[in-house]
Amino acid sequence: AQSVTQPDIHITVSEGASLELRCNYSYGATPYLFWYVQSPGQGLQLLLKYFSGDTLVQGIKGFEAEFKRSQSSFNLRKPSVHWSDAAEYFCAVGADAGNMLTFGGGTRLMVKP
Amino acid sequence: AAGVIQSPRHLIKEKRETATLKCYPIPRHDTVYWYQQGPGQDPQFLISFYEKMQSDKGSIPDRFSAQQFSDYHSELNMSSLELGDSALYFCASSSLGQGRNTIYFGEGSWLTVV
Image (cartoon, rainbow over all chains, first blue to last red; front, side):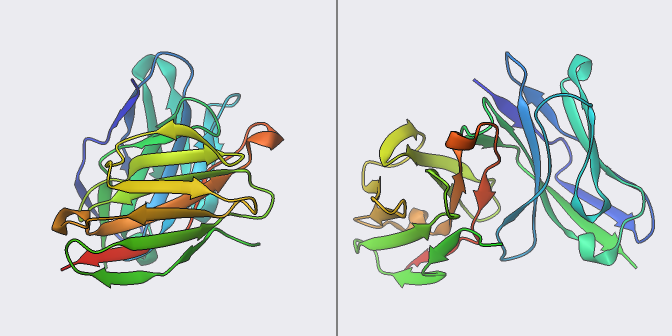
């Protein structure tokens, strides 16, 4: 069975600082990996996805993520955080592109002015 | 671009009542998913439909049922509601018929059981 672990429940960074959110997955084959963001009381917005090919994927809002098979990781990064990035971030894995997703527990990002 | 539409956005029901949530997928999407997100929890997969047939089943209680209609919209029916059913219910859609694809989520329906 597939699973996702996001080791950091809460992260606080200063505005303008760089950000890295960790995600580790467990899946027997090549996974389909996603990062979603959820603002308070809002739905899930897709930031980026990895299916195959280049292991460094670019997403919306200046986010990127790198797939590292050897480490079973798909960490999300942003060079300079903005106050509007404060939200809950979920990493998810799917067995196939259109298959059901298994989500990690989420990481709540807080941004200090 | 059109997104996944869910209704109602907010719903308050009493224990033992019944609730129905509706989901209208992105046009030309043939697959619908339902997820439940409890307070402070990550979304949990409930059930999915592809071309009006159930395709996957997750942790959906027996008190819940769902179906996908000929126009591809879906409804999640919840009966004998319990306090623990209070959650944000997401519908999502994708298009398996177009090969590799992505699951797009609606903004969710908040159910509060009192």
